[in-house]
Length: 213
Image (cartoon, rainbow, N blue to C red):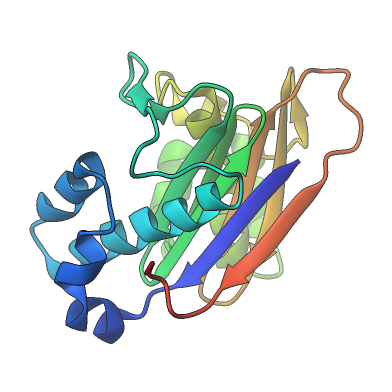
């Protein structure tokens, strides 16, 4: 089972309750918030930490006391349960799974297709140009690439064009686009084995209050 939690950033509410919300996060997440130079980044990190805590609580795990480590590439991880976080603009997403998982939400666009021409394969470039909505297709492929490399836990170690985006399966990895809206796209990747059958994904949009007693 893969669970996805989605949140639309409430800037005013989080800013007004900054100290109380920050105190509800473990030190490593607080540090992520405080190292951000601009308010938008600080609020994104704050909301992402609170959303992660909410998601883990549904699995019986308290983020405040959980044993979180990092792999050699700096990806946070814990034994027996996998999680991944993404944020872009006012959108925050967290995925929790019993197998390696990567998630990406993106508001990015490419009006002149310069990013597409630089980073996408020829087949991907054609898919973007030929799409009914090229910007939505650009964003769909971008989030699928990001979700894939976040799932592998290695980051972008090769040409971006070689990272799969057009297929639903790449070896042991499965790639899904969960939501495509005018403002954003949300994609997910999981490593579940080449012989895995149907994957069940639970998708929940979280409302206020995004805080804990």
